[in-house]
Amino acid sequence: MRFKCSSLLTILVFAGAGLCGAQPMGVAPDRTNGVYEVGDTVHWRVTWNAETNPPPAHYRFLRGEMTDAGQGDLVFSNNLASLETRFDAPGTMGVEVAWKGNGEEPHRALGGAVAAPDRIALSASPPADFNDFWKAKLKELAKVPADPRLEKVDIGKTNLLYWKITLNNIRGTHIEGQLARPVEGGKLPALLIVQWAGVYPLQKNWVTDRAVEGWLVLDIEAHDLPIDEPDAFYKDQFSGPLKNYWSIGNDDRDTSYFLRMYLSCYRAADYLAKRKDWDGKTLVVMGGSQGGQQTLMTAGFYPKITAALAVVPAGCDMLGPDIGRKGGWPQWYSNTEGKDPAKVREASRYYDVANFTPRIKCPVLVGMGLIDEVCPAAGVLAAVNQISSPKEVILLPKAGHQDEHNTHGAYIQRCYGVWLPELRRGKPAPVRQ
Image 1 (cartoon, rainbow, N blue to C red):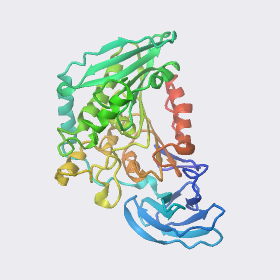
Image 2 (image 1 turned 180 degrees about the horizontal axis):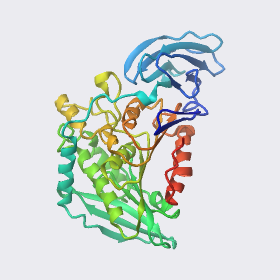
Image 3 (image 1 turned 60 degrees about the vertical axis):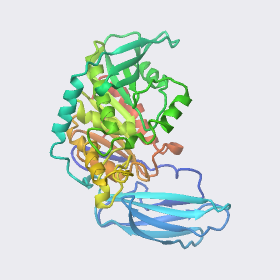
Image 4 (image 1 turned 90 degrees about the horizontal axis):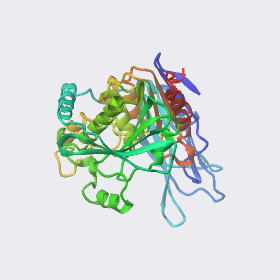
């Protein structure tokens, strides 16, 4: 099912084949797409699918993945229980059913629904000096020569060229990444890949798989780290200097860990745009989770981006808790231990994806899960609703943050099966109408 929310926005809704995991408890709204209008009542079905009698179970409704909207104990009849909620405003509603297994271990099943997704608004306006702040940071970056250093690596593929690459960034930091392209061909469409959260090495196939298709592709680390050390190196970094890196400096817009990361994306895109083998027409950025955060930010930050593809993007609508809904990872709103919460929240406004999306001019593909507790759909929709360029938004009704049991399959098919091939050929972005 699909419906058109405005002249520029088509939201595609794909009903998944089943709940994440092989759980005996299932939770689903009465509309398989999970989409409602304000004033509609959602009739939820909770099913117990095991051969045993259903256990005692407790339900809880969460408006915007945060605000308690009712709870109680379930009453089953023939392994079926029914619940109701009503939407009185645009937004999302989640339902959690909890029970204990044979060993008294806790279990959960989730369901999700959304009302008027195209009308979900931001929790706060951008800072008045948002543009001035980032203009100043770009001036700071411009004072640092990029000085690209490429190390050619033989990867045993005669049809591809592969390099490790280092670029300079602000304040003595660096951008580390990997670059690949086909041997044949002159000027090529360019693709920038940005990474999800965590501290880990880059895998060569992340660029070689795209390069063999005909892309000039650059994949960058989110951190100032080498790209191919042993796993133990990254584990030590994650448990040591980069532990909770998302909180480092987050009480000051000038010291946030994400300042270097955001400027890394800008410089990486600019590097691709300045290469002589770029075709000058197609410059795509893509990523998921933290990579989705960087993708949408880059699309609004770097003017030569021609398409952006993001799934379950983080960093959206950071002040959501002010209006009773959960913000996206890294949840700076509550990530304030040992700091002044007001300063953290103020600083977060300068890194909020929702304050970059109004600046996006290119076509966008975005996917989000209605039971995603890490990057909740309401905040993502609030951010995406600020985009005025053509966009395709895929709601994944039974998807959480991870692609378990192909719950992200509808996005993956559109991204890798349709958008990337069309863009690579120099065709217009295939935004579904």
